Image (cartoon, rainbow, N blue to C red; front, side, top):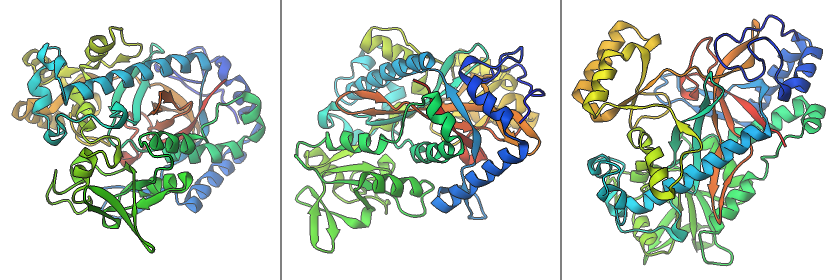
Length: 474
């Protein structure tokens, strides 16, 4: 398929240099691309779509009145990352995960970082995600963030920047795993010739990490799901199946004498570790939200008694806060006495007067985000918004400044993507997955999310984004 007319624009393009030369790590793929006709590429894309549907790789979109299940569109052209580039990502994510884990342990116990004035105490202690019941707790093995999905973007300078941390229930790893199987079949010879690092052992590594949280020789592990109506239910059932463990919901569990049991056809069976895919405050109506119908009454008491391990630990959500994100470079310096390997995107905290005034005056140039929103909701992309939308967000910021941050509009990198009109560049981000077990391990692959609409910077699936397989080379 021809690529001569491809325009990389002002952005960093992953496959082509500004002069139109193919980057070294894409050379062999580009040769394959040129040999394939447009008809062949669209046939491969159709086959990929059909495979996703037959596998049930669908998700629900909240706030979608049609109630339709959608596939996360998987583009047939992979994103390829050379090994030296990946090594820096890997080192930066290990450093960041280590520091954030130390931060969580500290703020729920000694609060040294707050007492030393590195982070304003009220920012943490007044956060809705700072859970008072967790104060004084140390989770099993001292690990809070067992599974992390950190979002990165590459800007026009060719450098990666951390966009946000997802430490409570990061999703999307099943799409990374299944996308690999689909794209591998599209380019079987090239895949093995190119030397792509495997991701298929993720379920085994996840299970090993979960088992490590228990002191039993053969702990019973389960995946706790909110149920079939959750947008990520496919992933919950997929991971339980791949690990060979039980998929349970709140109604399947019961707590007696601070021990958690599964209700089975043979009676009650004790469960030792839960990979929970339920938000913190819905875990236990006795400890958190009393209206929760999803959790298990008494689960938190069993957790405090050391009779069950939960991954991720309750209370990790406070480190997800986009206002806390702005302090992560200081968190790394405070606990590790190191400079960050991967930089944050410059961030303005609307809670601070100078930052707020700057944001209000320059809102047309900035991306404004709610500190506790996710999935692309509660966000304004200034350069793409109308004056009416600018004014609406100015009022929101003035009325509740602590609820908003702002960042410059980054020029996200592009990757060639198959469209009805041929191959065109589309903006992408990168979500690698980090497991914290006996040591911190970054899985050598990632979910690459794609803004499918031309010129769009919004990659979230709930906002119409798609995905790509991510090849990390040996």
